[in-house]
Length: 331
Image (cartoon, rainbow, N blue to C red):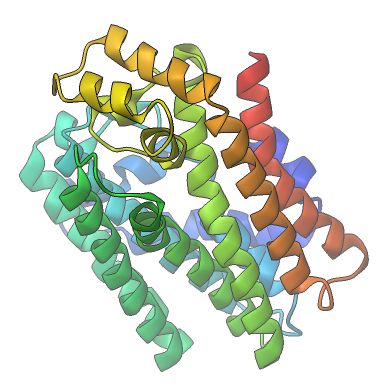
């Protein structure tokens, strides 16, 4: 986890105590009777990560009166869905690394990654079952929506004719849906009132979109060292994000299309030229304006339900995502 930063963002000790229990439970529930399956399924769990989704679950649980184990188990379930989906994503993308270690498909093979991902997704449902039928249905539906977003992204690869609407459909499915579910389950399992559950779900939906948009902007503004991979990787893979799509539909669109039609694969020179056109056309700045609008919308959704210290925490979580972009631009 990015502990130094996120501990400052969320300065509620009981949230972190629950998150520590999530970490323990992730290892407990992924212990299989077959030692090899245990090793595969725990590979990325042990590697770490920000645990952003279960963190949102624990923060949202502060909106309810219950202090039971429900939010911890909910946090485990959403992280298992997230990690299981990463196993499958790495097979699709033929990725070599994840969280600073070899991906499961690279360390073993694609079959191992698929089976390990399936095991994690099955365990997510098992963990969610005691939380009630609504929780189980929410987990199942979320993964179905995630798959739909991933399939649409696959269909749109290298397609120069789709626009921002399709982009938002992709990120809504593959990113925002699980982030919304993470917060919703936290409030639900903590016994929050229905109107509060709905409000935090709306907040998390906007934050989920912001999460992916900022990640996509980083691919255009950050250095290779900051990203841990070459800048412009999305373009190289034929995944055209919001600033690029807006540039394609702008005055530079003809040049961008002409350049992109020369591949794939695209040379680094081609990628650098597209990034230059996106920046010079103001499309990164326009995307940052869109991010600010969504953050304001998110904060408005929970404004009447969070007070005092908790209001600061929600605002900090909003700004944390934008700060990542600012840090990348400075570095």
